[in-house]
Image (cartoon, rainbow, N blue to C red; front, side):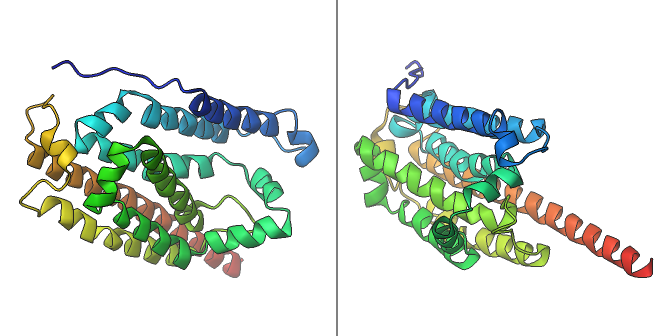
Length: 265
């Protein structure tokens, strides 16, 4: 059976991605001098933000979406990993500090955002929703009804964005946590995914009927596909977590070195 190559061109999807890109370009271009006079254009951050938008379209608009929805659990898991571990950190990294501070100027916005990005709330809320969506009844509902599938993706992406803020928050108004706390936070989040990983990989039966009865477009059996999806989830989680832990430790060490040199000087 040939692999489907359907690309989504729904107006709402394209308008959302293009609209966000246009608003970002407007902010860092013509409006930059009004928002933050004298601030130079940070090309690396702009590239990261636009890369996030490109990955977002490839995640939900490319044939990967159809593969994950109709044929392969592991393809659907790749989608989830991109929504959680690629797009949010790139969006945050690509947002200049001056722009984030400007967006958080209203006291009401700042108050709500501080609650949503509180590490305890954000970490628990993300872990709870991510786990909840892997319950077979809810997962199957998302595969069968498009609006539930869209809801599933949004309720993974937005909590992931809030979850990432204490690590990569680009604002001085609501800054990220201290490096030591970041490391503890990342470790707890990594442990929080273990139950879902065990649920997927240790089961001796296929948990989601859609994939059990789907046409086989690879040599993988439905159970092998499910196990591979669990492995994709855990390996992605560990690679990202260990990378962020290592960078946080290095930055912490560098900060302590600079502090020590300043005290000596």
